[in-house]
Image (tube, rainbow, N blue to C red; front, side, top):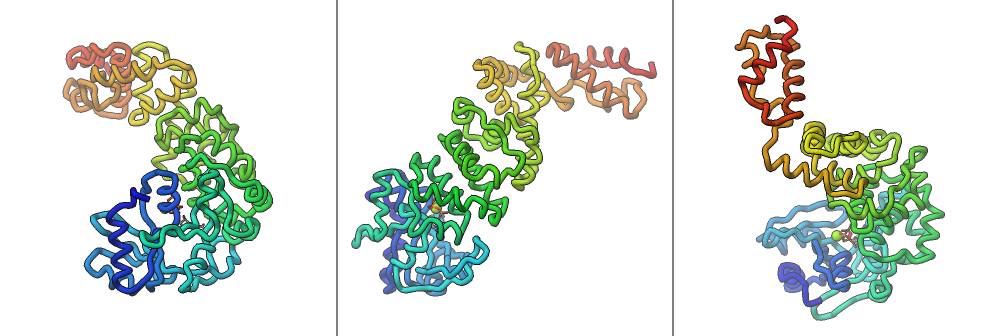
Length: 393
Ligand code: ATP
Ligand code: MG
């Protein structure tokens, strides 16, 4: 635990000095035990939310939910989520606890947490508080629910997706009784919002074991999440070896889907993400020539998504040619869009071509010429060509 950030220790000690108990808890303790630096720190304490705010009156604090008892404290610019020890009542909708009550018992707080590896608390003078043997689970790389998996998934179906996400993000494996409960309770995933499903799917697809994660997801929950349109999974060689770029990984995941757009929209993906994924997929399904011109055509069609598209094309062709040709085309500054042409619509009008819709058609034909041979991007040459294309000439 020697990697604990000094800012996290500061928050613990500050609560202790005010007379409260406080611990690091959850993902940060799990990651410290795995020998990995936590990406953020969660603390739990017996201090009620309003008290947490007054203990940290000199720092910026955000009361995230008085009812849920979470305060985010910013120290040295880093956020720390500090949550009052609590228990959760029933979950009649499989998502939101019916009632949350504060407790003085750390063990009670740990027992509401999802997996044993996430139910460990730590304090510099008490060491680990680990009533559910989470440390052992971490050593064995096991994901097991705290308590009865069937009940825990019934309470909150998101935990099933979290289990699959942790499996591929951490390289752990789901304990058999937890896995069989996922199979039993798969139908419950319908209670979870599409946004939260997408957040977990994104983490799975961006992990080093995206293929393994996506196949587990499809195996356990595919029918429930994707209904009739379950996409066939591309090979691990494709999914795991792409850069960690969200549109690129989604495009690979949906490579063989016959309705990628519906699928992305049903997961409430942003329109920017949908646009990029569809652009990449369209490029992948276009047979670009394997020469410099092909690279310019790809740049013209894929715009900001060109490098992603080239990466996927190369992986599918088992070649590095497209990526390399695209990079040199960019380095040479070859024009591939109307905006980069040496003439504008205004130039054409000034040269005597009547204004109107055909100006756009002419510019597009000029771009074609320039994509054939970039050295043609020269004002006088293009104006001469434009006069020949001009339907009114
Ligand atoms: P990471 O942040 O690395 O994805 P994490 O374990 O920190 O993993 P968070 O979503 O940040 O995950 O949650 C913090 C902690 O809150 C968890 O470690 C777990 O103890 C508890 N927790 C989060 N979500 C749930 C849930 N759905 N059910 C029960 N406990 C949960
Ligand atoms: Mg976390």
